[in-house]
Image (cartoon, rainbow, N blue to C red):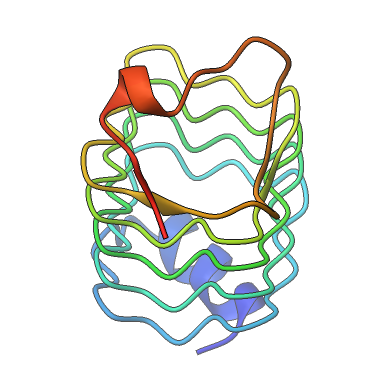
Length: 122
């Protein structure tokens, strides 16, 4: 499934896309609040400025994804793979990052503390 198909189905009312294959998808500025992408592969995807508040990205693979300036308020990111992801200026208020993985290449906003959010360094 590609980014355009996801946006089209979302616009038609669909919200449930578990385990979707969205490797390197271009979803820049996409407005997809409440979408369920549980276990989806978004590795290398560009989600800069995306509006995803209230979404479920639990167990999603977001390795090397660009989430710069994305709105992830209230998003479930439990056990998500955030290794190498760019989270600069990303809104994470109320986001659940319990068990999410990051590494030394993951980029967070200044003053963000992954340990206090129960994330695991890999």
